[in-house]
Image 1: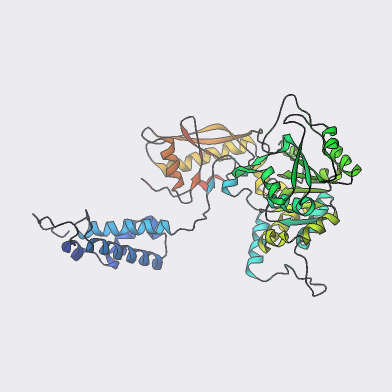
Image 2: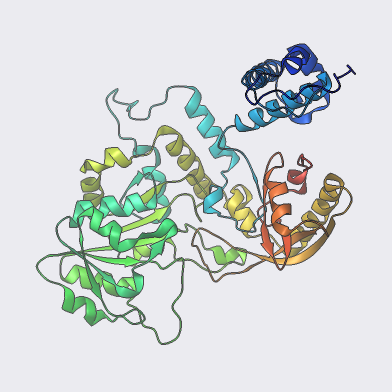
Amino acid sequence: MEPVEKDRKRKPPGTPDAAALRRLPSVDECLRAAQDDGALMAAGRAPRAETIRRALAELRARIAAGGEIAARTREELAAVVIADARAALAADQPRMRAVVNGTGVVLHTNLGRAPLAESAIEAIASAARAPVNLEYDLASGGRGERDAIVENELCALTGAAAATVVNNNAAALLIALNTLANGREAIVSRGELIEIGGSFRLPELMALSGARLREVGTTNRTHPEDYVRAIGAETAILLKVHPSNYRIVGFTAAVGLAEMAAIARTHQLVAMEDLGAGALIDLSAYGLPREPLVGERIAAGADLVTFSGDKLLGGPQAGIIVGRRDLIERIRRNPLKRALRCDKLTLAALAATLSIYRRDDDPAERLPALRMLRRKAAELERIARAAREILTARLGAGFTLEVIESTGEIGSGAQPAAQLESRAVRITHPERSPDAIAALFRRARPPVIGRIRDGAFLIDVRAIEDAAALAVAIEPD
């Protein structure tokens, strides 16, 4: 270690520290000193060297500008460079990163909702690496329709005559209303005027579409005659909205879809339903609450049904519209369709997901979201116990970890009242708050997102495929 001058005269503020500039280590010295730094060594040699070179140049400029540097020895200055390089490398990480979902919410909107099936991931990769017949008819050699990639599967699964796809379910509702009710009225029960995530409200979306909202009934009770009395010359649509993210209980009454559709037919109007989550199969077979099936709604008389691709369906983000062919064709001709259409990657993943529903006896075997939703307590207990052992080794002394009973959720507004029995690893520390422990796990590689409850940090295993996913690198504070 180099000696440091004693009794150095205090330099005026803003004066460069010439001694510190002379002691600055070389890039090679910093690289050798970084060999025990896990974060820097995880990067390739070229990015590591370039990051250290930039950090060294910035430190030199800071000292030359008269900045105060506590480090004095060559080794201390090298440590400053390495710390700065580590911080810069962390800041250069991609903004979108894989995380471990320990929240217990399977379809977590903030974490990307449904994880895709392997066949859907492969379909995305295949479509990404080569040209595809996105809008090319191989039989005729002419222009094709991109909806054709998924339309046959959707019609077979729902019983609808035609189908089209846009980029999410809000877009599906927007384009349908804009096409069929722009400048006219759409009648909706007051009890179905929902607000979805991000404070987006149905009345606002309808106003943007150009449709005029006509409310009927009351918050808790709507009757068939309410619809009939409201119908006038300006009415275009009777719209039913599935209240997937809340429940009204007690003294209630609602008009069923079949009855509403019959009223619509009598008055030559369109009967439309927004299902939101949109299930293709009966989830009660997996021990989950039953959701209305898209096929059942078509059979009940809906002229159009809209639903999401990335919720209970378990596919990519998409807004799906199925129903009467003449109405679907009108929607396709709307100029908004080009603005809201899906790209080849989304359509490839959706087609692969729909193929699982059509061709597999048990779609949950291949669809991760459904597989996670139907898990039993014994499996979750096994994963949680294995996770506790892994995390105990990762965290070291001072932390207390225990497996506890927990409750998970379906998520994304689907069945909000449904509680899924689950298991979680409860983590506490006598000198660390739950927020501090949560922050520690968010800094892990990959980050682990859990939740805080009753004064402890919990990692719920309901949406974690296997305990091995928690073999993460945890950086000490």
